[in-house]
Image (cartoon, rainbow, N blue to C red; front, side):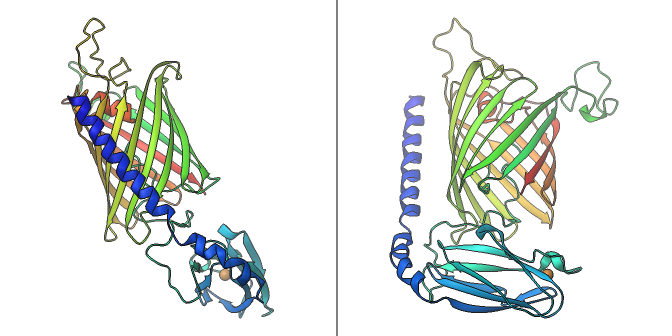
Length: 404
Ligand SMILES: [Cu+2]
């Protein structure tokens, strides 16, 4: 009976996903592509851009799909650079006022970041602008436009690819990569009997740790793949694809992620999971997440988690779990966040307690440092499905670094 419920929920989830894919796929791209050849043959539209310390004027440039464009950029003071990295454009603008012509034909609908690429003084870092490519010359970017994204732009509400352990809908720019270290001290905060108490053991920092290293890579626009491996030799490989972009006009993000996990360098006790990751931003401070997740082959003996399987008990708890990861990231100060997550299991195998984590994190450039408290040492869907400790808390930290 439990399995039927899980099956029905999965089918509903699949239907929602399929609908979303269809919505995303039916953007105005084909109409735009049809007239792009004709537009490209016209003589280029010239747009004058003035560079000065520390602005471009205009800072917002809008062109149409397929339009032939000539930007004429000149400086009125010192040497600047004019770069649109996502379009492969980068020119030096000399200080003598000579205009530099930059020719291109506008590609697909999207927004691209303009940067000054030549150091010009104290405000150099904030000297920038945006090039918007819209469906036609007189149309503003439409709410139904396809999900074209400048993945390199920093998003203050979705800073990381994960909350504490749960995934987010942050996109990985194509061809870029990121690392993460997940470090968990294995001594519970209220200690084992007779080991001298919390302070003497410095909140668990003296204890052995479980350390997982994670690598992820942007394979295609919106698609990232990765793996992590811990010093217990537990391995996870995963692929995630972005269907709806949280920074887009709807403010809702949707990803799907599939992952496979195995013990002993992937040679033993495999389990797998499929999840939808739904994100919703509320104003400019809060991002919320809900993640219906189906995990298969849960009830096997993995390290550090309850392993309730009795090999002789054929009628024991099932091998699959349906759970919903719930999470939030709150921006408390410009670079300080509070993160929480809770993963109730709603069907199938549910031994142990449900996973809970709370964390504080600080973002510094491409680094995120996070201090977290959890009722489990688990970091993957399979771990969460297997259950957490009923009354122990563990301290840990995550360090993440983006290489872009
Ligand atoms: Cu400059």
